[in-house]
Length: 179
Image (cartoon, rainbow, N blue to C red; front, top):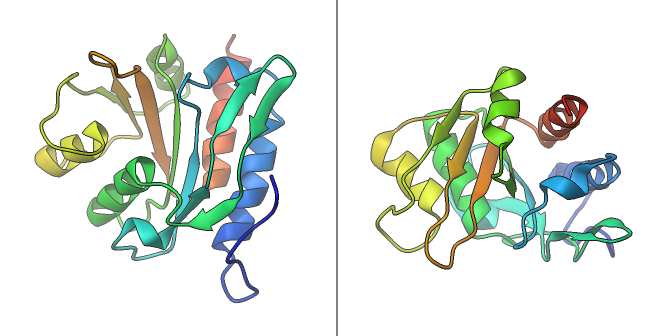
């Protein structure tokens, strides 16, 4: 990562997210959970109303033969899909401020084993943008994780939400320990 853009002493969100990304990419075995489209980690301000209120990597976390690499830097407005999930979830529970996307293969079982509420959404959810966001908006169902089974040309992924990015890092460490 090339650093935190748009951070300042008065706003801890970008620095907290940057540190969480470093911890996440340092977890042994995390590369096995990164989808082909890459992973991102989002952390929104309290009472966010748009994706511009959420910080994320300008690139993605990708898997390489040398291990995971975080590409880009942390900046506000850097995510549209994952940030929209967090913003929509925050409308239902103001404490939700963080999100992470990972692969979907057999992850739901592990997430349930560590005590998370996991929902599998339909492969086709009407509307432009993120299917998870549309699902939450349409159903009002708030879960800890949403598995999207994929669709034609769309990779299956799992979106995990939490109050803080540190909790997402903990969850990933916990499910990797189950292997």
